[in-house]
Length: 336
Image 1 (cartoon, rainbow, N blue to C red):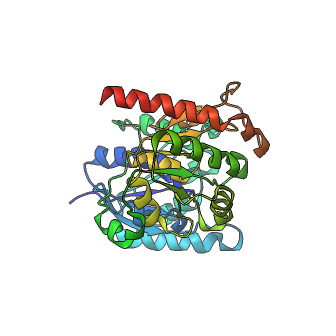
Image 2 (cartoon, rainbow, N blue to C red):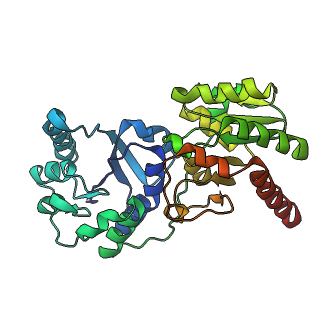
Image 3 (cartoon, rainbow, N blue to C red):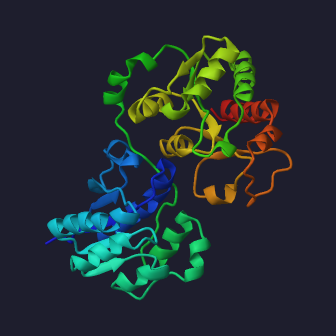
């Protein structure tokens, strides 16, 4: 009888989930079987992970706090009890998934064990309380190492059969060369200014004669793509702010490269195997070291420095970004 494996991850950002994929896959490979996941619905995991053969089933949980705390514990308990898991891995320090697993009588409950969580685990092999200072990827990496689980590839990868998406979003499939700009971010201080994207577009279009530029932007920040289009007065922009995740994936997969703010779509682009360039000014590139993202930073950039002021994004100029991209394009042409 195969062991049934469940992995729980509670963070809501798409980018954070993508960063955890190598560790989820490593656990699957360690047990030599596909795994179930319990995640937040906001990650849209059922769409982005539908073609991953190491993932069997995905359930959603809101992981709410306060008066909903025990309601969420009960929901998790029901899932555990129904599935009869042999192992529950928790890639986070939260208590609720561990409490529910304990109540469901799961024999192997494994997690970082930071804080009170260790009381509900079935193992004493846990991270140190000081490890909460590590980023989420480093915590998961250390957890797997402690449990002798090999990490064969630390870089996030996504597999997609985009034929279905291309049919659904045929309006995006215009003839000509296409690139993508990621123009928003969950945190405003990570966002390059709209007029700088406009200037970069002019430089790139003049040099490379790209026909279209996809503007990747969430619906709650559609004003950004609207402002770029209105400021530019050019007809080569394609606004993707009203597209769902499948539309965003279609745009990215049909792009020659992606350049944009540090955000979920930037991580998504890199995981999809598209050449991806991140505009990093106010946060740390060291946190993104297990990524195939290529970083574009201003001259006086200092790593491991967080600046919560969007105005500082102005220290990275469109000309600097253009020169970086031009040099990369020359390298590609010479090697091809």
